[in-house]
Each structure stands twice: as C-alpha cells, then as structure tokens.
Length: 193
Picture 1 (tube, rainbow, N blue to C red):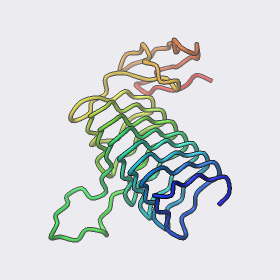
Picture 2 (picture 1 turned 135 degrees about the vertical axis):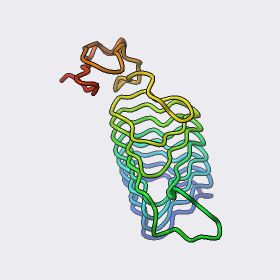
Picture 3 (picture 1 turned 120 degrees about the horizontal axis):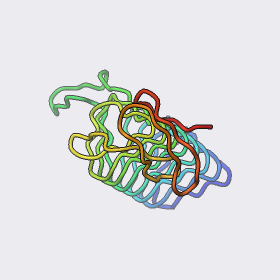
C-alpha cells in the first residue's frame, strides 16, 4: 500500500484493499475483505465490515460503522455518528446473517450527522439526508430529506446548495453558488448538462 496514511492505533486486517492517498485515523478497524478507493478519509472510531465497497474520495466522519452489505459510490460524505443497519428485524437470539439487505449510496450523496439509514434502500446521486433523519425508503437523486421518518422537503445541487424547485412537476433553476442549471421533469431532478 503506497501513499496511504494509517494511524498507529488503527487496525487494518490483512487483505483489505485500500486506494492511494487514503487516510485512516485513530482507532479505525477495516476488515480483511473491504474494498476502499483512492483519497478516502476515515475519522476516529470508524468500523468498515468485510462485505463493504467504498468508492473514491469518500469522507467517513467519526464514530460511523459501515456494516456488511453497504456500498458507497464515489464522493459520498458520511457525517459524524450516522448509522447504517444491515438486518431489518434484528433479534439477539436469532441469527440473520443470511438476511442482510443491501444498501446503496450513490455518487455524491451526503448523509448528515446522526442520521440512520435502514437497510435495503438506495440513496440517489447527490441526495442530501439531513442530520438526525431516519431513511426507511429509497431516496431520489438530488432529494433533500429530513425528519423521522425522513420525508423529501426539497432538492439540492451538486454543490450542496438548496435548489428552488417544486417537489413535483416540471421546472428549471440554477444553483446560486455555481450558476449550473438543474431541471425537474415529471418529479425527477437532474443536472442540465
């Protein structure tokens, strides 16, 4: 492993694949079969399971556990102490390792501090899940989600700015920070290239 920074208190099991430029901070544990891309950052007390795939340039803040059956595409941000699950109906006395539900977090999505992602959902590209939200169903690309359970309250740009678009219908707007155009067509938001 070249050009990778691993703190002396971190545990990286033999076999873990970690891309160049990745930083692994205090008390992190990365399991042997994990696949991690380039230029990622893992804050203090992060756990990464075996059946986990993480793309390039992902930022995983302190106290996040990424359990088996979770995939993060490129440029995903996991806020401090946010939570992934992998079993829908856990019981201590019932083994359900063969019932893990896959969770997919698409490119550029942000998962805010202390949010919870219930297993089996897909978080769309550049979606933004607010702090403390509980996501229990799929999230559309660019959707801004908040609450318990999480509900869509708006749309976000790739830059992380709220877009002035209705929740449904057809419309077009620009990101205030970048001037880039976004369009809403039949209730689906996309970047207008």
